[in-house]
Image (cartoon, rainbow, N blue to C red; front, side, top):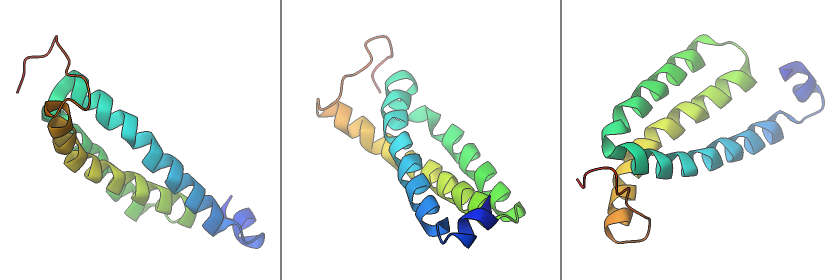
Length: 103
């Protein structure tokens, strides 16, 4: 895969598009995670991020390693966003889950 992308000078483009999609995927994940579990779910994203980071280091393929790195640091960024999402919910910008006790 990487060889094909490199030969046609598309590796950077593929990494860029994939990065855009990965970051875009995490926005609704933050909203849903805060809605259903609150900020106590931060440790899940820490573990996912650490797993992605380790995998990124161990994989030789540039494309896969890059995407795992982006995924990993997007998971780390999600931890920060969970706490900010809680503040957005408090301001009334997003709905609060009525089934979950208020923090």
